[in-house]
Image (cartoon, rainbow, N blue to C red; front, side):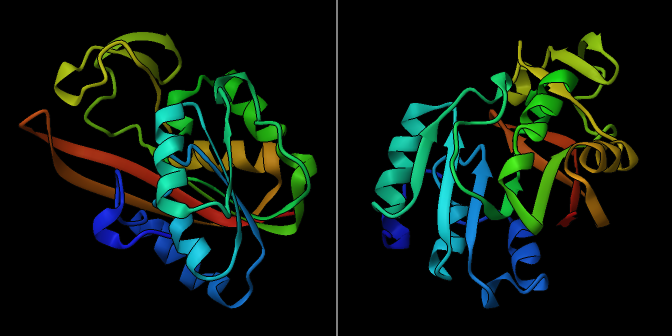
Length: 214
């Protein structure tokens, strides 16, 4: 794995991925982890450092090229269009992390991707999901295509024309319980201001859920 100053793209893991990793004791019991929407590998770098066997899937081949540069030859990195369902994977996983994907999938696409993981989860598999909440700045700014799902009209966030599905905490827990048999979920929220395309964007809002799959 590269030195920090050599890393391409995001250099640090998501702060809530870090919290989940240590609060759930994953640093003490390495296994096999799958990340959906792995980007350039910043989250997998945490697992890799603690001896986990890492698999990442992403649509963007350029991001995967950077992930390979950043992480080295160890992780298995798969190009996959997750709007078409779960990636082609083999074996089982002790942890699945989905930090930045579900908001870009329709309700039907999200169900298909999650249900497609079922056969690949070990009993008690750790699950982490972070996605966009219904009180986010972008909610309602665009054309509604399904309940809580909008084709965005937000050039200030660089997402004009993209589909976004927004979640309530209860709605996200329901989806994960129904598709992956999530048990005893921990539910957190995160709200923050950000600078995007050179201008302040207020009220970015995410919901975070973690727990074990039954």
